[in-house]
Image (cartoon, rainbow, N blue to C red; front, top):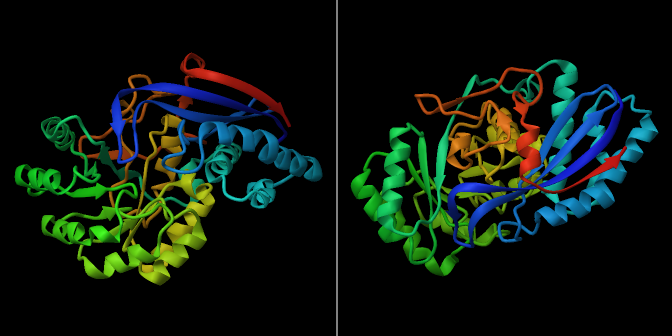
Length: 376
């Protein structure tokens, strides 16, 4: 196996409808694809769904591009030269990445592509490569802040009819208690959770104690994006499980969160934590500690979505994942066939070698903002 090149593609895809969180509203999703090509004609794909602005995390598509081109790709190239391309453990190819602090999504994109390639070489699915056991995964849906509560109720009704296993809504100050109360009045029995994307602080304790009344599955990331201490204090004072997302940037952060009892659920996003193998370490830790996890989404294209599905086939992904059908976000996804939702609210885990679907390069080209090929 000889890797010939690493191609970077900055994509901008229009969303079916805008998606709003506590920090921004977006009409398009900008993302970065990493495409590895071998001299034998194989192609593998990874994705850094970092978006255009540094609101969810410090990373953006542009920072990922810069770090991959100037630091991570040269590390990869040096490792390939040192080993003469004769390497059986693909994790060794990214061993130099630890010298770069942070930039988890940039690292994750390369690791995803390497894992796709390794699965192809082993003639196995990504799920099997990770040790996944499930044939299907439970699908949840994340609904952004809407123009009106009436429109949000309409979206929830549609999601319930599609059999999504969990409904998550975004909240922010002024769009929280009244919204949840109305949803619970209309949908008393649905599995419901809320996601604050770090919009509150411990000063809002009474609000979260009031949310206890509405039988939520979890309250996701209510406080600061890097906070563990205040979340620990909150979890002691409310009954609803706190779920951490942005605060879990790597395995070490997960260890600290569990030691501090900052949460009772963790949302694992492989792109956020630096790649699928770091995500699997967090999964294994939580399994040992009997902390359930689920796989979050970041408006990925089908490429990132398929990587997430493979990871979510691991046994401790016990709660419905933020992995929806492709049509939820895109009229034209860049994979074929697109990810679809089964009638029972499940998504099938691909069994084909590698990614599990073909990539439609015509659509990739259509939505490409810029591209560059780096020789390895």
